[in-house]
Each structure stands twice: as structure tokens, then as C-alpha cells.
Length: 193
Image 1: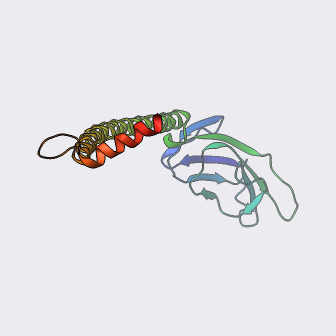
Image 2 (image 1 turned 30 degrees about the horizontal axis):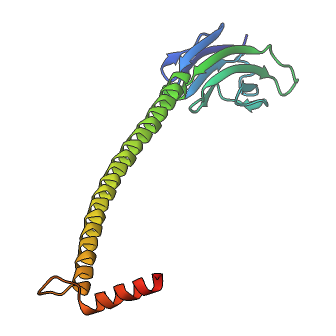
Image 3 (image 1 turned 30 degrees about the vertical axis):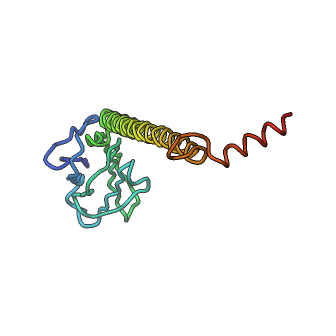
């Protein structure tokens, strides 16, 4: 009878009577099988498919198959021998395997990446907030300093204006009202009376 003699993913042999779980490694799946009869060896054809990769039957006359690097997922290998002259087909030989996802495609890895991304966003927000607060303090100090300067300048201007009023209305030698100040006062008093 036709039989699957061996199957392996890389160096990991697979159980042929159930489902085998293997870690993803990027290695090829190899399958070796034999025909039920050596008498018609040259005319026999093998039909095969790896469900999860091939949904349609493929044919070969070779006694081994190789699938390059399998992705993560569940697969079912099916093999059948066919006599092309009579159309007779054997029973289907089957084995199953599950290739586990690589560590970078697992939920814990995605959770770790999401956690790191959230931490990076939080850190960026915190650093930006600190920088903004530092800039706010610097601007407040600058405004306070400029306000002090303006108050001082205003006081100096008021003093200068008062000094100018005194110089404009008083005589420099005697300190008494000068002629223009006396005339201005008289005009004010006349208008009021």
C-alpha cells in the first residue's frame, strides 16, 4: 500500500498519525513517500495538496516533495497514488501540522510593542510639557523684568516732566514764578471770574 514514509520541517520530524505543532523556523517542509507497487513504478502518478497552501491537486512522479518556508498556520497534507492507465486511485494518506507564529507575530510581542509605543508617547508628552513649562517660566520672568524696566522708565519720565514743568514756570535764579507762568495764572483767574 502507498504510504508516507517521513515528513519534516527542517530537522524536526512530524508525526504522521495526528497533528504536530512546530515552531516557525523558515525551514522547508519535506515529505517522502513510496508507491504500493514496484511493478508499475514508472507509470504511477502521485496527486498531492497541502491544504492551507494548495487547494487544488498537483501531480508528480517523484517520491518526495519540498515546500519552501511555510508561514504560520494549520496545514493538512493529502497524498494519493493514481494509475493513469486505469484511472484507479488509492485511499488518501493524510497528516496535519500547525506552524506556530514566529515570536515577532505573537500577541505578547504586539502587546509589548503597543506598551512601548504608549510609553514613548507618554514620555514625549511629558518632555514636551516640561519644555513648555520651562519656556512659560522664562517668558514670565522676561515679562516681569520688562515690566520693572517700564515702571522705572515711567517714574523717570514723570520726574523729568515735573522737572520740566518747574523749569518752564519758575525762574532759575530765584525759584519764583516767571513771567509766562504769572500771565497764565492771571488768564485762568480772569476766565474763572
